[in-house]
Image 1: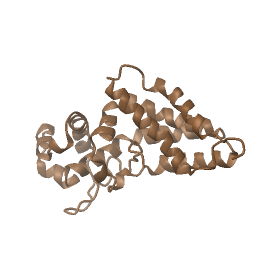
Image 2: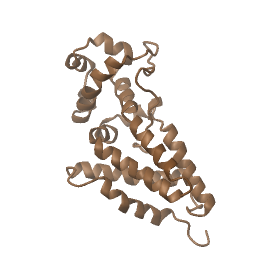
Image 3: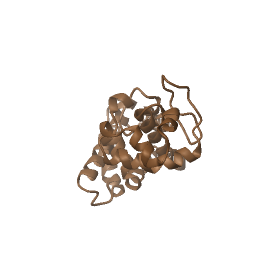
Length: 220
């Protein structure tokens, strides 16, 4: 699965990720609001391995016990907030697909553009997802799964294959990997070059390249 493809499985006042030490607990909105900007700043600007829960607790003006009670460790803390931050992206993708019902290529293009727009608006979330998060550990966590957008995008690609618009000589999953593999790389280079231009402006050219690789070819 592409590293960009993560789905928020938890929401404010929902259950925190379960840990071996404690059962999942309802996280008060006040805890979320105090930690949200701090977690975003700390993990987007520093090395994941150098971040510690006690420092976060001190900067947030909260007790270490309180944070530990709800999240257990810094991995669960970060994974929970990634899921929390990506709720807006999930909604944007679903809305874009629904708004272009009946036009498969427009659905794919708008869902890709939604990703470009979200990360241009929230570049620090992108830094965490693409550059900071310990991927191997995150892949074992339930928050890594991009359930709703993944299912919708896969369904769009599958429909495109049935319509003869998208190549049928490859898998639906591989087509999606192509789309979001290009997106991931585009974001990384945008960040590396100092965000000097519009990330959204790149979506048109990227989609043209993608379509050149996935459109149905005569005789296949």
